[in-house]
Length: 259
Image (cartoon, rainbow, N blue to C red; front, side, top):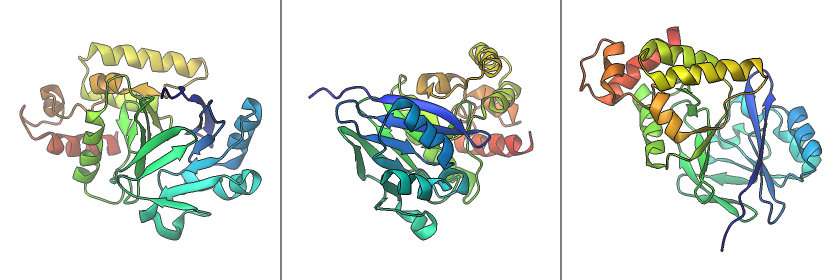
């Protein structure tokens, strides 16, 4: 059976969170990926004429869950959230862990546990349409700040994205593209494709748009945190070429924290 390609809308919430609605056109089922605040999510639903059936939560941080209670009250949507978040996320109907499958109408996603930014973080991988909702694990040209683990934990989470096809669309939880691009260029100034993405990010900013989603192919070519195995990135943090990529990643993340 051929699964219809989902319809997706992205929009800003708060100051830099990315709101996402995902709809299965075959059934009308619709999911919000996190609810940073209720107003923009409800407005996007009204504008599209869509009915929310599900909320898929990536992690427990307030800027991803603050609007859940109101949106659930208004829509009756089922809330799916990481089991490891426990009672910190409100109104949870379904708790999920590594390897579980969630469904939005005829669409299905595998749940990955991707800790590092926080211990309960999960990612939703929709294999058929090649969509991944990475929350605050992987960003366009960047990655999440390590908050509740050693950097190697986030590095292991990021390496999981390496198994996905280049044309996979990556939806992240924030629009940090310009600051990420500046750091990426500082770390790898001779990457011509990265320089072109920086110019694209600047154009997008002036036009009031953002570079979410990105593709995994673009990230492999330009995101320093996925390129930690490249000799140029090792040299940028004063490590010899051939240094273990996890060690290079740790040094890059520490540099970015101060950038």
